[in-house]
Amino acid sequence: MHEMGMVLNIVREAEKQAQMYHVNKIASLTLEVGELTGAEPRYIRNCWPAATENTILDGAELIIKEVEGLVTCNDCKFVYRVLEHMTSDLRPDCPKCHSEKWTLKQGRQLMIDEIGVIDEQGDQ
Image (cartoon, rainbow, N blue to C red; front, side, top):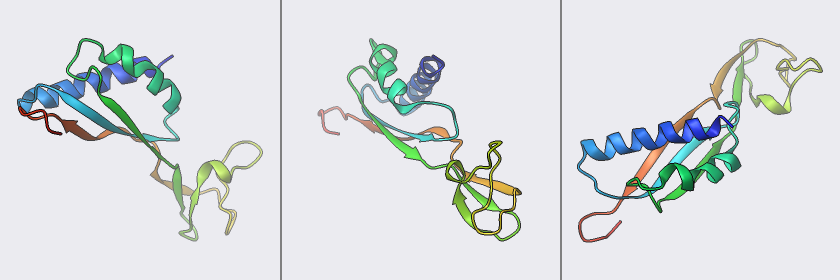
């Protein structure tokens, strides 16, 4: 399960950011997960408790924003969800002009979008 490695990297990055800003406790972490990354949000959620145990993220809420895989057709400029419009041999097929030439617009990101912290009074 490669999601555990991903989650451990996310935890390390969040800890680095927290240290840089002198944060002692993280209450929540919002993660953007593109559908073209190969990462499964449910597996990320399953790994979260073990990966955050005994860290400043222990008990933090994990919020996942799933991001559709969108491409722009290079010929007609139509934007479409690539996984919904594939040829039988799994190549993108523009639903408007049937071109197989495209440019990725979004959907390959796996990134921290927001970190919610607890201040010294315990407020978020």
